[in-house]
Length: 344
Image 1 (cartoon, helix red, strand yellow):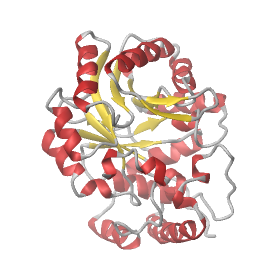
Image 2: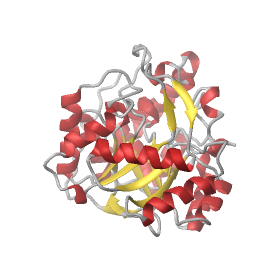
Image 3: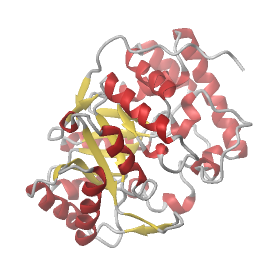
Image 4: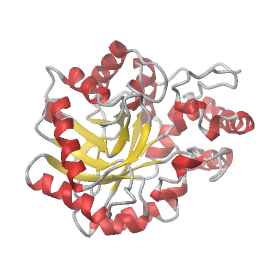
């Protein structure tokens, strides 16, 4: 293994970007809080809160969560982290609709109008706030037309409980149908060097409709962090233990792509993660990368990506190192891929 480059740190206050033509202005990078409560194995709550504090102090204004992350734990954690802070200086994005059992099992989706209103009521109580900045269904509910879900959120906008409507992991046709009911601020969707399927149809449609993109998975669940290795063991609750891209030969292939990217990063004196984040940020001013840092050191590294300028030569080298479609394995297991309107 080569010695990782020392991560650069941001040298200026954070730039801002606007989510679409109708959405809020946020920091140019957001903090995804899911891993602090769920799906990536155990997390340290005190360190999680310290990381959120560090993000806010650094100028990050967008916090992303879901009411089903840890069955409400993530929203309660964010509430604790925001205690004594200026709520109006933060944009909170919340996903809803995923149904969980008390054992953490996944039971499907419910984005019906009644479920939408109920979910928001509990979210407002857990976060101890009177509004959510961006509210969105986590997935398209196959039993409920998207027009009904968006219409229900639009009523909540009129009532003042929600400021903007977002969507998550939907395809171009669904974007059009939703936008015909109410302006959509942004589409939250996986976008990274290893996940580029949105480029063909979804991203052009979003841009046509004036819808921004909040890109999650920019480090492909840690694969592109530069910190993952073949021997790493994952806990039983860690999503990556079941992810196709982390399995056997797929992992070997994907880590080979990371090493090709590492050569580019080291030539620039930055880290692999910083190049991967900077690449997503370079795709357009309408894209806000979400980083899932659970620790302050990882947050510092991610923030350093904002100081990384990728020249045309750099971008060509990145494309050659990690060509579109070069990842081995789907981004989710087959059963979860079936729930993605964005992949149909």
